[in-house]
Length: 407
Image (cartoon, rainbow, N blue to C red; front, top):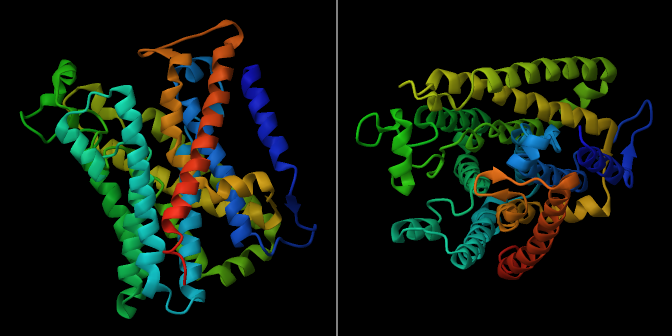
């Protein structure tokens, strides 16, 4: 662990101190699943996801800088989905006629956020002179193909919100809402496991077996160019299902967690460790990316095994986090600020990460300076750029959607 990592970890820990809410020894935080608590939690997650994306850059990987975050981004997103599913179902239970204005107040604002983001990234790519073909530009501007590789989350959220609306507006299907969401999540997971990371099914047959062919393929054949070509699209979806389940059974969950808490916490922690060990073992030894062995095998069984393991990780991690928050959670102005702008922070990350990439990378090769000062500079300017762009993006979104969210 290098000094940069230590400094970041210490700063993060110190940021938790103001507003740290610790329950009495024999008591619990009764507001641990309140809107305020969940908002601060999303603020923490927004910062953690940024650390995750930073840690994936070659300069960070080779210096093991903040490497703790490198392989656990899907768990943070799983908790984001937990918050979304929980909040959605709680609103549905508490607010009469919630679904009557659901499309206008909940879905349409996110769609507007999405296309504002597309416009921002389109300007960025025009300035950068990105070599998109006319068809590629058309698909990216339409939103059918991602102009920002991290915007997949918005697409999945819109799919889930629409599914929630159509399932729960009908009393008959609403009775089976959670099982239906399980089926939907599994269907998308299996879809990814079949299509993998690139369109192997395109002609000519088995074009992908020869790695040299990747040097002369059209843009849409490149890895992860099309929707659902990547495990990150699907491996955290069960967080949303977990959120729905907890919201529907909140009273039972609170009663269950309040009795013999220490024992249940210890058992859940052990399960968390075991499931994590299995999940990371699958990730590193079986791999989602086995088709890149170029042995003519697509590795569908490998993907199914890894997908199953990571779904279990997400579910167990979500439950473990909720148990922890029953006793301790953080809520302060810093994380409230980021929590209220978590989507904007998330969507502006790729712009900042690539705009300043020249500080730590030339082509595909990382750049190292004495004391890794360029890595420190990169972290600082990326964080500031994300902060400023998220504030501006949030302001635009508020202006454009203010009328939609009025009762």
